[in-house]
Image (cartoon, rainbow, N blue to C red):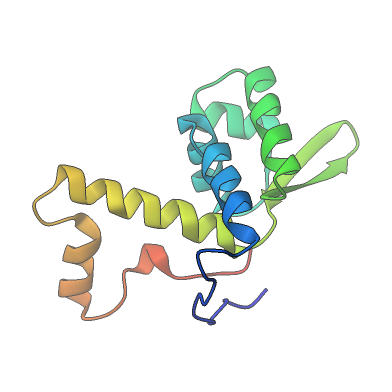
Amino acid sequence: MSEDTHTCTFGIDSDYVDLAAEVFALLADPTRIRIILALREGEMSVRDLAEVVGKRPTAVSQHLAKLRMGRMVSARRDGTTMFYSLTDEHARNLVSQAVFQAEHDVDAIPTHHMVEMTQGARCPASRTTTA
């Protein structure tokens, strides 16, 4: 899927404002953010995600079910194993931007700005790739 290059032109009365608030509510959980960060690299099984995020597979499955309802992740079955991937680049970008914002609260010069300064370009972590 290609990167969305359109500028946001939604007004304050947009029908999407309430839905956007639901997206933020869905992401207001550290485990879900960790799951999305883990899925940036590509498809993973529930077992592998559980190991990466440090939670039990049953807990990760519950979080994945909510992310799936929010259309942020997609599932694929291979035999008895479920594999999950990001549906598109928007959840990846949204979480990356939230983490970048969090860096501003912690660091005088956030890591993503140091990377920009040393490379003279956009932070590589914020580049969009196909899921």
